[in-house]
Structure formats: structure tokens, C-alpha cells
Length: 293
Image 1: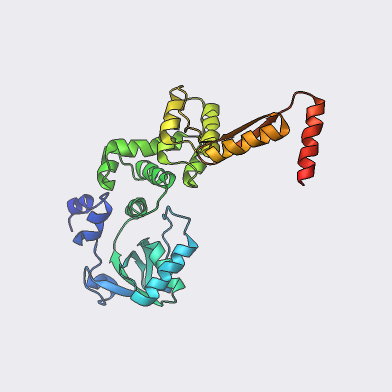
Image 2 (image 1 turned 90 degrees about the vertical axis):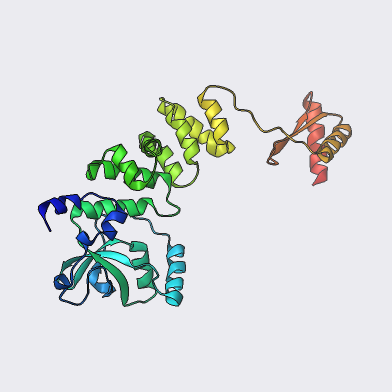
């Protein structure tokens, strides 16, 4: 391989690297056991994990489900490794499959064997991580940031590699400017990316956190948050008081000879207010309540 070809093979996206013959191990490189591009069965205990793996959280129940599937169907998609020395390999992508295979009790696993330097390893792991299902927005944003900083990519080049518009990439990166409390709320699913994008437009951190609390406590929609950010009153859902509630409140008012008011929001949460004019009425109200017990 020429020096020119070597340079051309570096820094490309995941698909290009995995499909390129320039990055295949040849049969001579692995003692004649495998030909270039072949899928090999490697002993799991000979594969070390990827030190550049950006993902640290693996759902145990999901891993168990995958392990059960692997017991029945086997590993459908091979993992990708690079050769580190005689009979030693390092995982490039597929850690979830590797972990589930261990849980399933497999001794070997199908692999693609590739050549990759450390920068390629990091890039490939990050890009695979970005394309996982159920990835939260903060994990995506952190992976984008690492690709920019550690793989020295521009936002244009990054958007090309991950197959996203530049504006989409920029929106994810902006999330990392939010306070830690808001990033945790995104990560843990308390607010959506839409909520977060509205909060990014607030320069005052204290106001961001106040609105964050309102989003969680009042279950505000993205539209309501956008209105709050624009300093416009958010339209609240119309309160709905069932007719039966009104009838019961009126009956109670007559029985007590006091004013009774009932309120209820769209989710069923509400209050019953009884007005008394003086201490005598208050004592009468207590007697009424105690007799009911």
C-alpha cells in the first residue's frame, strides 16, 4: 500500500472504514487462518474491551433479553475487532453484543477483524454509539463534541460523517451549554430535547432552572415553555369541573350554610374550598366533619 493510499484511508466514517479492503487483515497477518474480509470465530476471552468506548451505561434487562435471543438465534451481526498481537484482539464496535454473548455463555463470537489506529478506533466507536437506538440527547451531544475535539473534525465534516444536517448537529452541541441540572433532566427523561432547545435561548441560569422545575412539576408542553421563554403567559389547559362535582358542592353548601367552591384541572387534580365568616361557623364546620367520622 502506498503512503498516499494510507493517508486516504484515515479519518473516514464507520461504513467506509469497515467496508474498505485497505483496513482488512490479510491471511498472512493472522497466521494464515483467515482471508481478507472473512468473518472469524474468536474466543471471547481473547477480546479486550474498547478503551475509547463512550458508552458506560448498559441496561441490564435489555442485555438479558439480547442474551436470550443470542441463546436461541446466535449472534446475527458480528462485532468488529482489531488485532493487537498474537491471539489478542481489541473491540472496535459491538460491546453490547459482546456483553450479551458472555451472559449467554458463549465461548466464541463471530467478528470482523480490521486494522485501525487509535484515532480511527475512537471515531468508529463514537459514530457507532451515535447510531444506537434509544440514545438520549446528552449522550449524542457528548459524542459529537468528542468527535470535534478528539478527532479534529469540523461541524461540516461531522455532519457528513453522521448523516445529519449541520443545524441538527449544532442543536445537539448547544445542549452542552445548559446547566448540569438540565442536562441530567434530559438524560433521565424528565424533559425532552424540545424543552431543552427552548431553555437554551435563556441566558439567565437561575431562570432556566426555575422553568425546568415548572416543566417537571406542571408537566408543561414544549409550546408552553416556548411561550414562557418569550415572556408570554402560557395558555393553561381549560379547567373541567364535572357536573356531579358541582351538584355535590352545592348540596354541601346548603347543609353547612356556608360558601363551598370546587375546582379541578384537566388532569383531575383539584381542591374543595369552604368559606366561614367567624369562629362560630368554624366550630360548626368542625362539628360537622367530626360527626361524619
